[in-house]
Length: 607
Image (cartoon, rainbow, N blue to C red; front, side):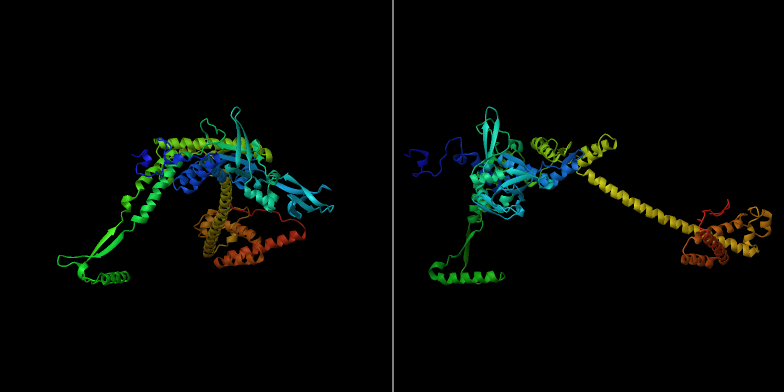
């Protein structure tokens, strides 16, 4: 009898289970945090189930920022143009979910100088010829011609566009944690490649790497990071020996990913052996004779192979065979043997282990206010955003404000919602119209930039004013043209009536400026208003005053247009224009300005 279950088949089993409570994946446990980070990183890159879920968890809660304060434009320029804060927020969330930790520092720009040890003259490193020998900068001073090792001097510069957020790789971070005081000391080890590049004198590192990192590479030492310029996102964890570190969110599902890979390997093997069937053709016998006795099977095989080749070339080829043939196939049952259903179940388990519905990976989630899973997911996003708000307010904005002298500015994330809340937006718009909410806040919440909208509205107002001005100008020109045409037509009609009755229109004005009596007008046969004929000279004077202001060419053309319609009126206007021009010339000769005098008008003039 076999002495143990592993010998039940007379041979030693290749798989040993360490405990009845554990599975095969439990036979290996990462010995260090750094080793665990390598596995979480590997599965994030390689798992088609885990990677999209983690990325959506990291990206979905990131919204735009709202800037407040008098100097908000300066802060916005640094955040948007220099740091590119929205992209950095997604990357920090990725580090947080994959590694359970994210280490962030602010890099302020500086300029490197090489200082001469003799005359203390500082030379910009990019404007002086130097060589890298024995881990020192060897150069020749342009001022005193001293040649030798120069001192490195870094000077900070306040260039807003060159500010950067630096994310430190957890592989190269070591944490010394005091369990009594909960204090942390962070040290950073330069990657071996960076060390070699510095030691070999690569200019990108020699001219741009802070001096403390150059010294660490030269002396092969670690760097203690400044806690005042380091922010540690740490995922909450139970009280354990490694409480200085946060635990990755994907750690509990690594064994499920391992099992999913086993199922996929099985599907792969099934696909290789069972997707395409193995087909066999053989001669079929009958009750009269056996084909295996009286038939040359070699020639029959050649005949069958020849007919198959012909059929492959022409699918309509008809084969004539000397014997009936049989056909049999093996395989082709991959769909029955496949593990697709099991894979889907494991994928759901992985999604549940990450705390999200599986539909989040495929983008088929639908909003439901009573969905408990979505409420839990929303709480996860809210907690993640609160951590990001603390980073922005207590660390990033405070340091940028102190460095660049920006005062009184605040930054907050736009409100996060799992889906567009139409009712909330309508309520906000109503409160804005009632004066209970500011327009800028409502527009920012809806995704519009208030300042850009104001600029566009100002441009639109200026354009509308220009269009209105042109419209009014064209309208005035049109109205004046119509009025002139009416006046010309009316004057022509009056003159024609005067010519028909034999009355001189110049006699329409009496010595006292009054129109002729109604009896005299009736005697002349005039049927219009008694004051119409009296208004003709005043209109002639009015037109002559306007035409006299025109240049000579336009003046002549205007009189000619009137002459076509009414020769008598044109002659009267021409005479009046000549009188006005003589008066103007006389005044100019005496050095006097032409007085502005309105032409006489009859009170009852027709319009």
